[in-house]
Length: 538
Image 1: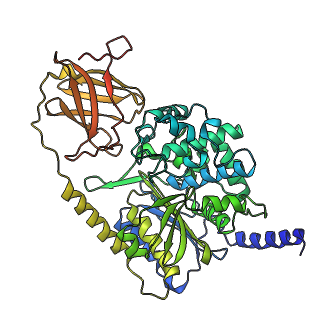
Image 2: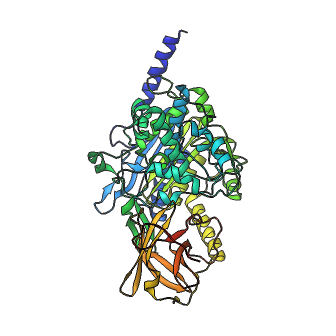
Image 3: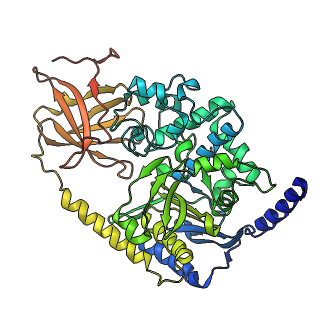
């Protein structure tokens, strides 16, 4: 058979597959018998886990067998979720960034094992040897040696005042937790660095590269950058929940926020209909609808190979019979009841995503929702995957399983932590603690007195504003104005022998502080009034 004829046949077949995608707003339900109750499961999961709305899509053997919106995208205006409702993808964005780098490899413009400094000379880690040896593939496989989430304080809560250049520059100030390439530790800042590498090599912003090289050939109406105002009419509002407030909108995290600095790590906005096209491309080994190879077989193999080993816990063994887990490039790899499952979750305050596909049964799943409890996406994904992978076995109630699991995790946490208790007073008059304090990478925080209270604000992160409540000695508790933006923290002021405040350090509001907490690399030194320089007097 000629290459031309093979290509024509493939194009026709793939086009027929795409015809199975829903027309605008259409719900599709061709579920097998073992999943006939899925719509009811989804609705129950939304109610149980305080999640307003969810869009779910399933593709099997090239055909969409389920595509529907459940619940509300906007509670205040009573607007429903549809298959075309836009959600933030959060960290399921990472596969797009990995694919962007893979395309440049396919183009011959770089190699996975090239050193990062060859293309980004400003890149530097704390250890010069690590800086020199850091390869492009290391940016995408969570093995930098940094603690999990290192540098996230420059990204969230949005909006961030840091530029991507500043984020890359500040990597040199982050203290490693382990040796280079020895352990898995999740890193958003490395994916941001990878996005800037794509921009540097392709001579266009990462957002434009993704739009041209991925969205356009797959006919995906998705956005790596700012969304046009007309598309916001079908965008899901992000929501959080707590016992005191119930379900509430997370204002800072809405899709309409522009200029997202963390875009390459978690900023894409998309809908279930178009995300199924993305999943189908992976099931089709990199081919686009017109038969072109969007990613080469070699790049697909590289991205879906194990690069960093992940631990298998008791829950993995009990629920999935998992023996092996690893991180590829933008994807997690595991075995579930003997089948390879490739997946990734995405978590932002107010948005949850879960994308998975199973190559050996040619099935893929997309779950997008606008809540903050992972139980909703988890229960629905487990129901779907087990419906296909263990169809001959009795099916569990995964909503109850997640309820039990979350209750257990809460009890474990409470057994290890208690609310710190202090005298409620500090040693010096409040005005002595005021001033501007500067950290070499996070920038400045300002402490001011308003009446009989102290206020704190971070210059680079406008959402980080709050009150300082006296705790004990020279320590205060930071109560953030927006409790959804960050957890309460301790602010401990350092004093010299003249009883002058010279610095302030932050650490989590808990009685058991881990050494690798989020503030450990921040050391705020008091600036001399009007001088613009810091000064420490012993």
